[in-house]
Length: 371
Picture (cartoon, rainbow, N blue to C red):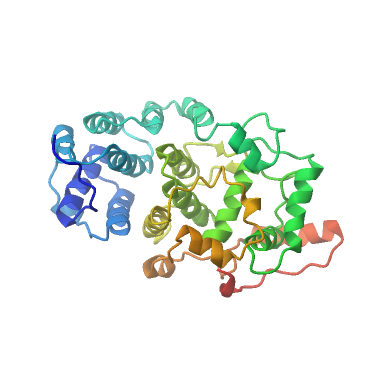
């Protein structure tokens, strides 16, 4: 057996990889316009090498498998996930595409739960696919580590809300007392600026979903639906556990295709947001930033309160967080305190919350220095 190839792919291998992804994800009439934007954007962000789809020749699953024979399982899994991501943006998903995804995955000796989800999408069994997400071992897990990180054991399922837990609510409320510039104070201000209700109180998001709000603040992403795609792409790629890809598959199914009517205990389907101008590149850049973090980070299972009193710049440095690319910023990627990083609905919710609680209303103001 040849030695395992561990070096980053060069331009020639990237062309090979793009051939395989395009071959697996295409429909009978070729790639869709969104796929033609997404596939090159992903490879440019993740490898630094541009890809011209028009210059690529078709490739069979067997030939592709042979071409990646020296690559290890982790590398091959990521390529299958790139195929899946490129296919899951299509609705309706052709049955032939779902079959090719399986064929290419088999040729790479890779299995991924999302292949079965893609097959159900292609079969029109959307409700069954939703069940697969709810039973997914990563998304649906409730082990001791996760429960400890969430600081509650009052959960019927992983995405259950906790609306009557004074101790949990108090823990979140204490974040307001931390100094400006700490991660925890950033999260507290992030919540107040948007009228979000903290876990433990009526009307709050599930504690597991609230975990990702810390990532909004840490990684510098606002709270539009386009930003949500970026956050979950970042989280999925920062985790070396390949099952975390289901996070990204879920939000694409919510906020691009609408295959899922709801998800994560709070989100509702709202289609077409990956088609927003520049979003293919922004998604790719979020994945790049996640991949370049130091080590593996399961942000859903992290006890964020252990980091709450630390300066956010220090936490960013410790995980090796790299800046956004200039192209992603130009395309509209903004942070929680940058113009465009908050929605009118959230601004109004913050005002309503202040009135309900009988406290002075301090409207959100742009403050790019915080991002």
